[in-house]
Image (cartoon, rainbow, N blue to C red):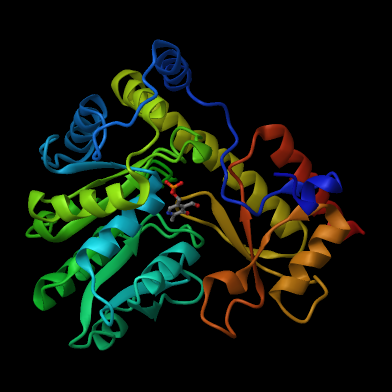
Amino acid sequence: MTTACDAIGGINLAQGVCDTPVPQPVEAEAFEAVRRGDNIYTRMDGIARLRTAIAEKQQRDYGLDYDAQTEVLVASGATAGLHAAAMALLNPGDEVILFEPFYGYHVATLKSQRVTPVLVALADGDFALDVDALRAAITPRTRAILLNTPANPSGKVFTQAETEAVAEVCLEHDLFLFTDEIYEYFVYDGDRHVAPATLPGMRERTIVISGFSKTFSITGWRLGYVTADARWMGAMAYFHDLTYVCAPAPFQHGAAAGLEQLPASFYQQIAADHQSKRERIVSALREAGLTPTVPAGAYYVLAETGPLAGANAAEKARTLLRETGVAAVAGSAFFRKGRGENLLRFCFAKQDAALDEACARLRHLRCG
Ligand code: PLP
């Protein structure tokens, strides 16, 4: 798709697409799968090879034990995983608590099921969790909390203590915890991702949603997964089947090869590379007179819009695009109405040449 941004020789730091090369085993195995004819529907919950590789990955990374036959669903992206979970486990009129700033698809997915999203604001500046505000948001209709860590758009990585506090609330009120852990390998400064399902009593009630879009730079392949206790999985697989039938067959083989063959150093390199990209964009934004919040994870920076002209975030994003050719997302997309109007979100998961060119143009914004 050609965007307005491309048309003016722009650099798209708006969309959350990582355009770095696809890891060799992932790409090679997908091609090979097409050639050998693995192009037909798979089992509705995915090929055994990939389900096994996902179960092994959850064990290797977090010590989480999932049965590959009954507790893993290969989904058409994390997006489809959440959709299946919402269809299977929530009813119209239920409330689900999310943290603000939020990822728009989360809110929209819930609304599509006539579920009410209830927003709990994280602290301005450092995005700390206010446990009292979380508790105050619980009502008799609350059915689940949706936790995205590391988070889009804030880059927040929920700490062990914060994750424990969320878990405690789930246990106290008998709630599901839906997690979106798609940025699990994008954690910086030597910090680590806390997998909420590892906390005492949480495995049974946590619906773990993640995927390969970001880790393997394959956003267009539409491949993700859900791991959860067997008692929830049947209904999720059924609703995923109704909507998507199955995830793309040859790509499932590609992702399986990635999980099977890529060494630990591959995942460490992802964090190191993106940490370096983070430093570059943060410093360029500072030089431009915008005020970024340094993200602890994921691959976005929220920055205050400082000198940019415009009455609201959308106008400021347009000013930036006009003056520099750099596209960013208006902060208002991630907050309830009236908030986020002084923020822009920049995605830094770009190949170095494009990112460095964007940074140079941002610096020029101040000089010009
Ligand atoms: N979850 C979050 C928090 C995201 O930021 C994104 C993409 O930007 C997705 C899910 C989409 O994941 P997928 O491509 O696996 O559907």
